[in-house]
Length: 138
Image 1 (cartoon, rainbow, N blue to C red):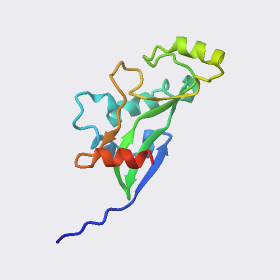
Image 2 (image 1 turned 90 degrees about the horizontal axis):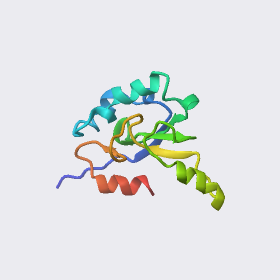
Image 3 (image 1 turned 45 degrees about the vertical axis):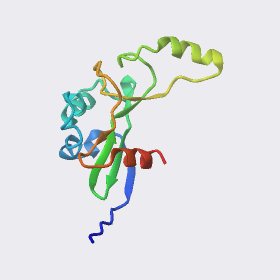
Image 4 (image 1 turned 45 degrees about the horizontal axis):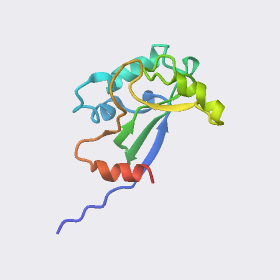
């Protein structure tokens, strides 16, 4: 009988894709039909000068690590406005204070500056997606 002892998972928030090795990030995106979640695309947006805190986009990428191996990640951005994110929620932002709620800052999970569909949790092939999601949100 063979026993496998898995290393514990560690969740980390990364303020820039520079903190994550490109090959490890891209190992999570190889099966996607679009390049807009690839490390090079997101890094270009972060370093080109328009996708930064000064423009209302603060990278807060959530990653799950098993030792030094990236096993899951979600490209996330804190936003203090809705301009340029293809999420047309201005009516909600206007109405929220009238009901005693805040709308900003908000956390946006997407590939910025693209009308790509859906939020993505990127997972390394071969990982148990349901198990990782359960651990992530514990």
